[in-house]
Length: 240
Image (tube, rainbow, N blue to C red):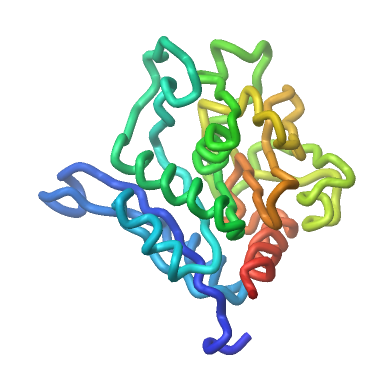
């Protein structure tokens, strides 16, 4: 695909406090997010955390990827009064991503939520989250897998007839796993399209929109052949 016709896909950044890379606050993003978008024919553009500029960003992009990160959505946003001891917040990032996702869906722009991005998407769609899988799901898998993230951690079952199934062309995928939270309820109009063997929700979608997909794993690692197809489908949906 020529660079002159590549759709612009906004990618949310993670935020870090001083230390490591810089003595000052800094943004972070693994390079394989942008590499996966480029390989699919898109033009990735990083989106800093400015909730007040969400509409300006959305004026300029054709689609949105909400990335993962080592933090959690504030439980108060989905109606939980308590907060598990393992929950870590990044209020500025969450505020910016909420504004971007809500604005993108209002415009019917394609949205792909990855890992924590799926959890945020579920909350926007009116769903709720499990705050800590080991305390909630009996006989749960190791969703924070001990092996490297570029290797599969477990399988997921894909529901036939869903958008995800049409994209990946399979009812089983091998995926990595790097999360301690999960979607409890996907929302009143959302559909669960993938689950782990222990019943944990691994994928959601909302058919009210032309492309609204959340996945709990990290397809940017291209572990399963379906992972590339997810990015290809996102980029195709961004072409106006």
